[in-house]
Image (cartoon, rainbow, N blue to C red):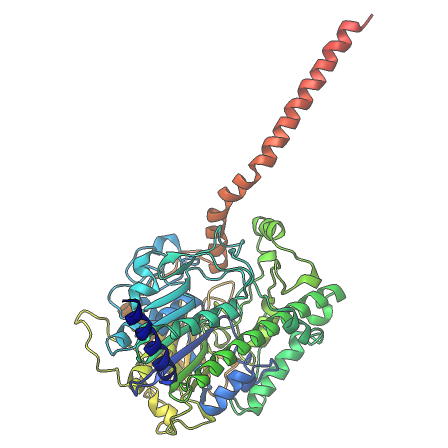
Length: 598
């Protein structure tokens, strides 16, 4: 028996190198890699006009197609729901995020804050077509096992269930959550120490794709980086690269970014821009304030470069396996740049920040820090657009999109697609490109609402939507309707005045000239179309006085107040004992003094 085993082992050793040389995907169908960045502005990628070093994303852009007029939601969960399903967010069950939904909306149709059971994910559709599916990184579409990636078509998944987490340590964003929630294959997991989030995400992706369970199947990898969500953190070498780079401030950067986008052919030269009320005068800041803000922006750039390097490492791994040419790459951001500053959100949040983070200027971007760029630099990263994350303005909704398929000559390398495109279009496009669009689906499945972008990738068409075809959007009361070159938009306070405005976002992408008075018939017609969209998708009106930032603080306080008080009880007990002991000693001394008094 022992001899038989030795013979078998020798034979296995002899043929295993041959197996190793065989391509992992022997199906002939293309692999898919979706690279989802977090809170990147339109011009954060070098190929879109920015100064940040993103050579690997730039290379994909030159091999593929860049989209100049691509839109997502103003916050992460609704975008992720639409990316995963190809269905508009309310129909998919994510009409709002857990952190911003008003209590009155919880549980209402379209407001479950998790993917509902009527929608199929891209992974579920591709699984039916024989794909091996993995997800690594941020999920933020449900906490229960039934709502996690393994239940939605992914064979392997390392998932962060919340909006963000620390990048160096296994801990939460302390201003939002009491604990961090990572799972692997729906089981709670503690991340290995030490780690850096972008590196960990690519390590795990490569490991999953090497799993023997693939068995020659094509793969779909959903790679969801934490970069550049709060807290902004990066390796020291990347931080050093950008030290002092942003001393001139956000106004200078905004102008440079707008020129860069125009120079790369993404926008017309010198587009008009507005100055956001939340953007302070850089020259009016003290030297210390300028140093702090410039350092935060340097950390943002460093984190983006670190992420790009990890993208390059994944690409190198695919090239080494002979799978690069037959892989479709999709890169996008989940929304525009983050303007929030937890340090200035109120007394309770300030106490949390000071209790859990090192706020020294020289520690910005490093382990233990809480670094944010604030509204000034957020506005610059969205140049030349108005607004940023949370808003329905272009700065919140228009983000970079790159689609590349290196081995497919039908995709026009280096092309810029200028027609209107939407995040719901990604799923149907990938299904069409992989030949999986005809895979059987349950009759109850919510139909995909997005469009196949293939004609825009090949140059056969500039747009996939008719000039009078409306595309509606709403999140937290901030709303928009796109139709041809025009956009109807409304932002509630503190991001806007709560009124409808009309812009030509092709000729005026900065949304500087309101056409409502000049085009009253178009203005009224688009409002009617928005009302029809809102009714069809079950969009609910926001409660009186609702504010998304205030709602975030309210939920954070409710989750964190009791745990923070429990953390303080030993100190409170010690203080109480000290007071009681002090009072007892004082009374004893008084009694002693009375007894010995003459």
